[in-house]
Every structure is written in structure tokens, then in C-alpha cells.
Image (cartoon, rainbow, N blue to C red; front, side, top):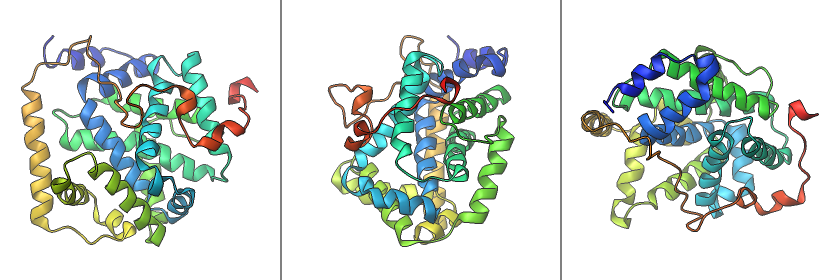
Length: 291
């Protein structure tokens, strides 16, 4: 398979019909590492909103179970998408995720924003640091995946276009980004978790590298100073060098999709393992189209 064979195939697909297939090609074959980096930075953007970070901070999960919290978030999305959002596996994951959220009084606009970060975050990362940019069919497919997740989670007024998600995200951040101590605590706990994946001597450098990739409005909201220009250029240059190398590599074989490898579950997991322990004391409610 040629390096651009999947891109040619994606350009011939219909996003309205094939968005789940295109999403899988993006996240498991064309840009698996970049997609996950974009999702990771999307999580960090959520912490720039005091109303969101206070809720996350109050749960204590980031401080005491940060790795599991990260893994569970990734695995919920994987379970919903892997066999198709309307498959029994996908719908079961959506019911379970809704049960986790039912405990909290979360505003619809906050749900919309968090969802928008998972659409826009990976796209912006790939366009900036991927081995190629996304084509129109790919960006629209990411948006349609976000729209489908909104339907399953009963989130109202979700856009169905990528441009709509971008406008929503930028306008929300302009209104709500502000510093609060909870922002810093949740971000610091998250940086500690991600740095723990590397040898101890490298951990401060990993955190500094991550901070160098964040924009100044987000850094201010998290309580971190702007990073020096040289550090920002070095971080961006390293990622662009990686993209150049990846561009020269052969395409990922069809038999070898990149699937999540959760550190919290080295021996495997079931859907019931995901989420806080108290989740299973709450009843499952039907999905919106099952009511």
C-alpha cells in the first residue's frame, strides 16, 4: 500500500455515509499517535474553564487515580466507536458513560465545549504536526463523529460541521477561560500522570515540552507562565522533524491498527471496569432514542 493510498480512498468516500470508517482510518491507521496527542491536549483545554476544573478537582480522581481517569476516558470513546456507534457494544458504552455523568449537574454548554475539544483538538494537532494535513472529508468526519456522540449522550444543539465546532470552541473559550486554583491543581495532576510514562530524569523535560505546546490564553488560565520562545520553537521543531520522518515510512498495514494500550488494565478490561467504583450503584437509563 502506498503512503497516500488511504488519502485517495478517503477523498472518494462520502462523509455523511462513511464518517465512522474515515474516523477509524484517521485514528488507527493514518495518524494514530498524532490523534492521541490531540486528544490529550484537548483534555488540558478543559481545565482552562473554572466551572469544569472545579468539578473535576472535587472528584479527587485526577489527584489519586489520574492514570485510570485518563485510560477510562480513552476507552469509553474506543468502545463507543470500535464496532460502530449504533452497535450493541457502542450503545452499551454510551449508556455506561451517561451513567457516570448523571451524578453531576453539568450544563449543556459545558458538555458541548468538552465535545468540541475532542473534535477540534486532534484536527488542529494533525494540521500542525501531522505527516500531512487533513482533507475536507476527514475534518467533516471528525465533526460527524462528535455530532453522533452528542446524540447518544443527549447533548443538545451540537454542530454537525467542523466549522461549527471550531466556532463553538473559540467562542466558549473567549467567554470562559479564566484562572482558578482548581485549574492549576487538575493540570498539575495531569502533567504528573503523563510525565510518569517516562524515566524519572526526563519527567521535568516532558512537562516543559507539553507546556511549550500550549497557547498563552490557556497557560494563563492554568496558572503557568508563557514559555520562552526558544523552548516553543524547539518543541515545535522536534514534532515537525518527526512528521518528516513519518512521511517517509510505509503506510500502516490493514492488519495492524493502533488500538489503545491502557496502563491501568495490563491484563484487559471489561466495560464495567471503566469509571469510578460508585458508578455501578446507579441505574442505567435508556439512550435518547430508546425512551
